[in-house]
Image 1: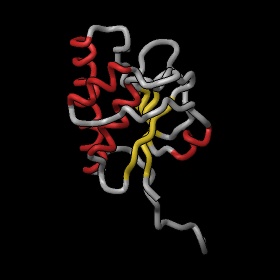
Image 2: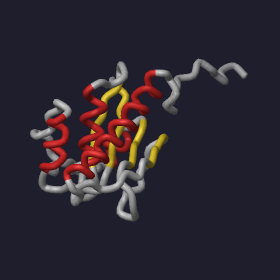
Image 3: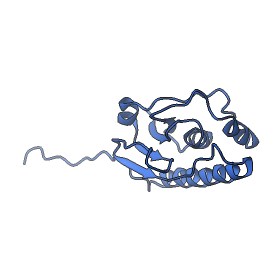
Image 4: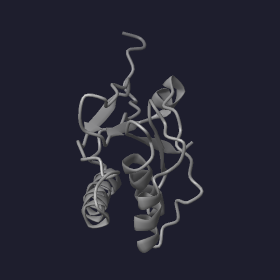
Length: 147
């Protein structure tokens, strides 16, 4: 079973969708990303679709998803990409808070800069996972049996 990164923002309509798409475009071996939010929007933000299309990544068929306890339980790493008080708390062993500004109401140029920031952060996460530096649970051969 693949290990999972769970990208989270409030509406799962822009930042977390972009992060999921970047991660899944070139994931570390044995990893996959999913995304969700506590208050999912009706659709992915058209600006996100346009900006990802510029990078030759199609997210036009994606739908915002509601964050569930099952998603949290299946995640090895959760990344909170939103900033502010509406960002959810999650019960995942390893959580990163990226605090990325909401690009939804920004100009296309400003939103593009935020997408570039997400790309840099996702690329860094992928590299850390590939090098074994991301904190993920390791199986131990240590046993207390017979003591």
